Image (cartoon, rainbow, N blue to C red; front, side):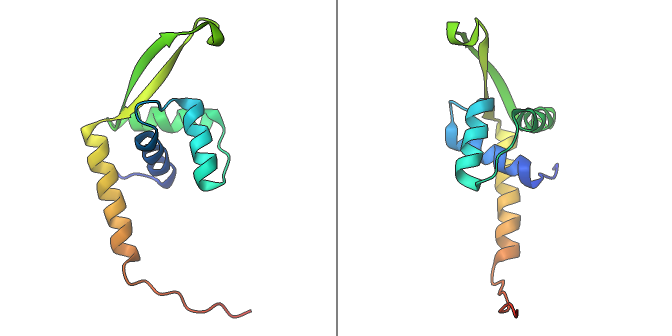
Length: 107
């Protein structure tokens, strides 16, 4: 199974949280709210392209709207393969974190 990078993982989690309304700008806003970090739309779409090529997400074209100059939003949903990869990645992190103790930091 393909490995998932941290940003890929965060985008996939955001897609799952926003389902069925996950599109570029909504993902950008969700990541800012949840992580405090601001990612460019270009970065978000680069990740979406990468995880789409891996078969983890499937795009779906919405309706064209006058507010968008007649363009349609592209919505993203996790595929079954994407859900399995995300769950495996999160489980691996949970296993690494289990019983991890941090020593006090000396200054």
